[in-house]
Amino acid sequence: MTKSLITTLKNKHLEGFLFHVYYWGRFELVEEYERNGHHFFAKASSNAINKNLSYQERNIYLHEEGEQPRLITDNLDSFFTTSKQNGRQLIFDSRASYEDLFFAEQMYISPFRDPEDFEEVNAYVNLVMGMEKHFGNVFGIKKINAEESGHLKIIYMQLSEMEWEIKLEKELFDTKLLHSLNRLLSRLGNSEETLHLSINPEMYMVILKLNESQLEKSARMGLIV
Image 1 (spheres, rainbow, N blue to C red):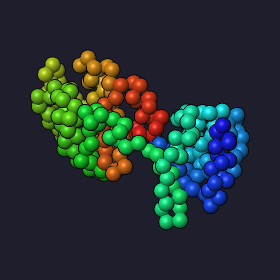
Image 2: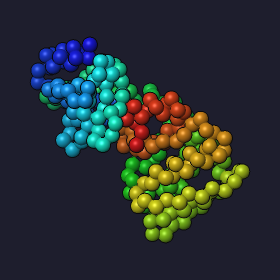
Image 3: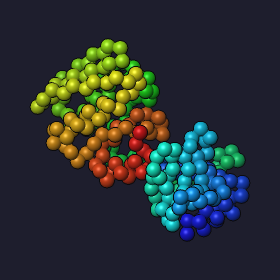
């Protein structure tokens, strides 16, 4: 069935086309070849990105260098429901919007677009307080302070039940922030949901608060940084 769909698409669009694979980027069809039991049929349209698609029966896998094949869907048809013409190029784009994928209360759209913003520790403080407000005082922050020395940044949080300290060392955005906040959530008794970084189509940093099944789906769709 998957092979039949690919053949039909090739025959219908002889000049070629691009298609979005969730949020993994744009891909284009290639001459099919087989390797390690996978039938490869598409590659990332940008030569700067080494990503390929394969199928086994109905299952579609994403391949990245140095990574195990990632199962992303068993419904290839879903990528070809909506198309648009961009000049002479036909592009299939059936991506669901963030608003369709997530409830507003589990999605904090931050004001930050550039990782370089986090060269200053106050950006982390503003991000944490933005999460605290959006997610309904999820941490119980009473007071927050920060200091920095070189690349080392330290955030001190006075909470309702304890004190919490976060040390960050990267020059740009450090994902240790979210790792530490997830440990804090667990200490506070919320082990069912965790915080994860995403980048929306407008290129804003988005913090998602997800349970395990939501995280699995989001990761499969290429939404988790």
